[in-house]
Length: 230
Image (cartoon, rainbow, N blue to C red; front, side, top):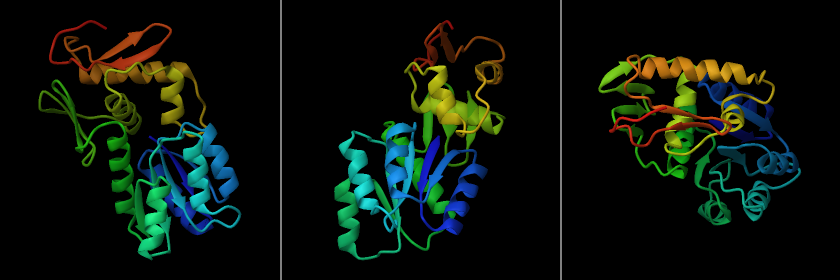
């Protein structure tokens, strides 16, 4: 999951970036409204955290310009403003959720994950396809009720594929949503990661959960209740 953090308070922005990175998320950050408009339009954003009180361009105007450009990623507004009228303005401009400062970081993380799930069509914290299940709250993955131990990168890869179950996801898209902008983006590393994930989810080779579509990318099968081929 790739998060765009737009917050002009340096200390708070660094705190958010640190907490999100520690959770294994890819994070882009800025304290400028104008730069936020650019990043939201040009970067592969899954969800954004947006402060309203930006110095150069009001957060509501940033949000309005994103929506006017057809950027539909969910937006969580953070603000010191607590008047209900201002919350209404934010929601009517296109925000998806609202948190008033000060806040607990755990709540920010929970709301972000909920926004991304809902935007992908999942209402519950439990993502399931056949015998494969992922609880995004506990970050536990099971196959046929047996827990599977994954590294942070393996979990992030599987989470993205499960949120887009049945869809073809290109290597470029996976790389953009899994890694920070300055990360060494070697496609061979992604192939190794997918191979490791396959072996952990399907050690006997019967389930075949992740298909490779040559020249197109990968797809997590949405019909895992039935036998298939990779």
